[in-house]
Amino acid sequence: MLYNSAYKFSKRRSNRSPFLTFEPMFYLLLTILANVAIFLSFRSFSKFNINTFPAIITNYLVCVITGSLYVGFGHIKTTIAIDQSWFQVAAVLGIVFVSTFYLMAKTTQTRGIAVATVASKMSLAIPVLFSLFIFKIGTSSLDLWNYLGIAIAFIAIYLVSKKQASESIGKKQITLAYLALPLAVFILGGLIDTTLNYANHNLIEEEVEGIFPIITFGSAFILGLIFILIKGIKVRPKDILGGIYLGVPNYFSIYLQLKALSAFENNGAILYPSLNIGIIIVSTIFAILIFKEKLSLLNRIGISLAILAILLLSHQEILRAL
Image 1 (cartoon, rainbow, N blue to C red):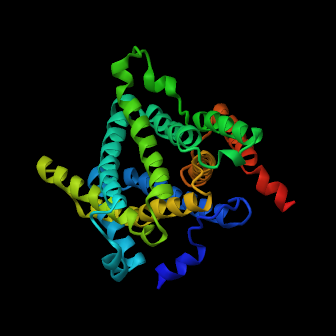
Image 2 (cartoon, rainbow, N blue to C red):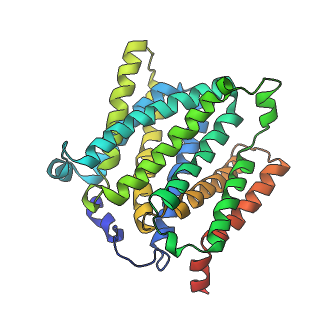
Image 3 (tube, one colour):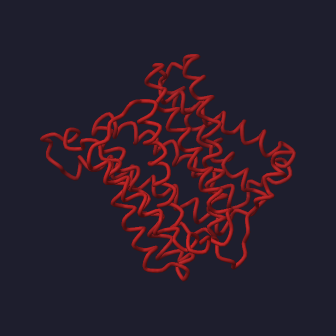
């Protein structure tokens, strides 16, 4: 069964450094690829005139089906427990997923894609700060170069994500009300990653790693379906199709993120900057090759800084390899 073979690369809760094996980079790379597949799916929505919200809700159901097939219905039946803390956290997280998506859509429509993108990407500040100063996971293994890499990562992500933000803002006065939507996206996006970091470190054992995303996406689907029925939103066949090819990588993006967190000993201060930078670089490459996007000077500087940040974040592993 796929589920059993997957645990050949299982969660290790030992005291060894996460940089001593290939496992961290293996799961980091897979998580990046799953997220890039999501990016490509979203980019196709506008090309094929797919309505985003019903496609997203369909995607949540497909995530549940994909996860159930991958993990195995028998394992789910024997492992799932409603009274367990991880189950309750997963269910609540599904509500946050839907809320974050809705606010992201509203931010894009009313504030522009540049503002929405920067708010989403920079939300990694929250899990990084929590990992460093609240959870204090793996801080003893970090050195000056790692901290410098984290700082550069923020600058790089902002520069690569910047798409003529001045045009999005125009002459509008920047007030608290204007910033409310992107601020909400920033906070909720950071809350999702922080919750995953906390849950994986304290609540999720190896046998429920594959089930946790199923409960999260199941909760998101139920809430989204209720919203669609109340609002009377029309769901077309092409919207369902879009949700199908989005749902498969979306399930694995969360599952593999949990595996990556375990491989990095739940050190979110290292994982999340590396993950976001990797997603941005690979997505940018696809955007140039497939969608013929042009990069500004700031975007190019951001990519250069992103590469430098990755080298600084992973310099221990590089030195050991040499």
